Image (cartoon, rainbow, N blue to C red; front, side, top):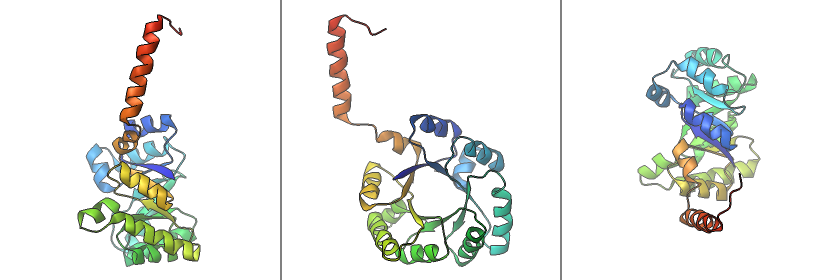
Length: 217
C-alpha cells in the first residue's frame, strides 16, 4: 500500500521523504489556507519534494472553469494530479483530463456507487473519506471493502485512495482490505512507529550496552 501525506506543510513532507515512506502528497484548499502560502508556489515546492503524485484541487464547481483551473495547475509539474469533486461536473472534468493523459483524483467519495461512477469516468484515484464517514455513524472501512469488491469484479484500474485517515487502525484495516493508497496527516504516519515494546526494548539494550563501558565510535 502506498503512503501519501495529507498536508501542505513542506517541512513535514521533507521529513517523511527522508524516511523513504512517502509515495505522494494530497492537498486541498483547507490545507493550503492553513499554511498561509501562495497556492501555486507551495504546490510547486511540494512537487519538488516527491516523485509521486501531488494532488492539487480545483475550486470551481462548473466543468468549464474546472478545466481552466486544471490547465493552469497541471503546468506546475509533471507529477501534479488534478483533484476534482465527485459531482457531475467533476466527473466530466475527470473524463476530459484522463483522456488527455492527466492524473485525476476524484475526492469527497462517500458511497460505493459514487466510487463506481468515478472508475467509469476513468479516475486515476478515488478518495473515500473514512473518518468523516465514521463521524456520521457509518463504518468507513466497510465502504472501502465494498469499493474493493466492485473494482475487483470489473478489473477497474482506478486506485482506492483512503482519505480522512485518523489513526493507525484505519491504516491497518486499509492494508488488510487491499486499498491501493492511504493518505494521512504526517503525525498519523509517524505515529505508526510507536509501540511500547519497541521503546522498552531500546531502553533495555541501551542499559546493557552502557554496562559494558564500550563505545562504537
